[in-house]
Image (tube, rainbow, N blue to C red; front, side, top):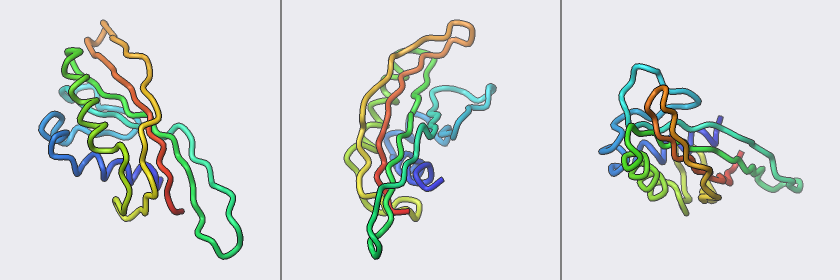
Length: 130
C-alpha cells in the first residue's frame, strides 16, 4: 500500500490536477455517479529489491493511472497534469520515501461509448523504501 499512498499524495498535491479533477482521484474504481474528469489509479505490481544485510529495503512498484474524461481533450489535459505531478519526482510523499517516480509509458487510449468515457492510461514506476 506504500506505493499507492505515495502516488496519491503526489496527485493530490498538484494544484493543476486539482483544478481539473477536484478531489476525484480514486484507487481502483470510480463511483459511477461521480462526474468527470477524474483519475483512477491501480497497483499493477510491487516487487521487493534484493538487499544486503544492513541496507535499507527497497521496492519497485508499477502503477497504472487512468485519466478519464467525457471528451478526449479533457482526458488528455488530465494526463498532462498527472505527468507533471508525478514524473521525475523524489522525496517523501504521504509518509513514504520515494527514491524515484518515473513515467514508464502510456497505454492505448480508448473510448467506451456505453458510458461516454475517454480513457488515457499511463504507467509509473515508483522506487521506494519499504
